[in-house]
Length: 258
Ligand code: BTN
Image (cartoon, rainbow, N blue to C red):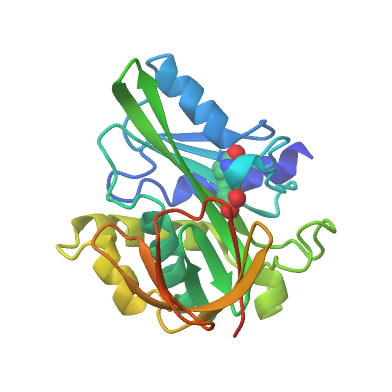
């Protein structure tokens, strides 16, 4: 319905920009993927720093590892922020930590699941997908993609066990424009913070000390997240003995065990 997405566009526009973020709002009633659109704008030389692409609905939302991101109409924040200068690193921690703060302010028990998810309790409420646009070896800019499930009441079977939404966790729909504003404010605060994102994640991400069930190929084991090194690599202790340092989630499948 036109009225539906136009009302959302107006509500979002009314709280933007936040510092340099969301200077221009590109609101898409329907789009394949906000990340794909933002990358195309970068590639065409039309992007400006702080551009925010927000979709009412994505028909081909991109998840990590080539997966689809379920993005039904009006049921979440499907958004991509454009930066022309390198974002704070590790870039996936940036929106994840900001969202954890914004959700905690709403009373939700949010935490980061390394490297790019946000959990409430043991279930995933949001995911981050950072992509860069290159011309040859020269970066043209970065796209910080974030999908936050807000009012989804039931999920497709393939993600049902692990996914959740703001509505399912709190029993209410959020003020989504206020949530977006808080999220962008926290991103601004983190970008200006002299502490690195790794330090902030160590201190307040709710990750260290938590237990995860891991699948890696045919292997199954349980770990406790012990530390993050300066690059944001995760140091884990296996329940069956031994310490490992993980550089990326690669072929790992992590599920919260507590
Ligand atoms: C993940 O798999 O956890 C990452 C999901 C990222 C989804 C968001 S929704 C907005 C933006 N546009 C996309 O196509 N993907 C990201």
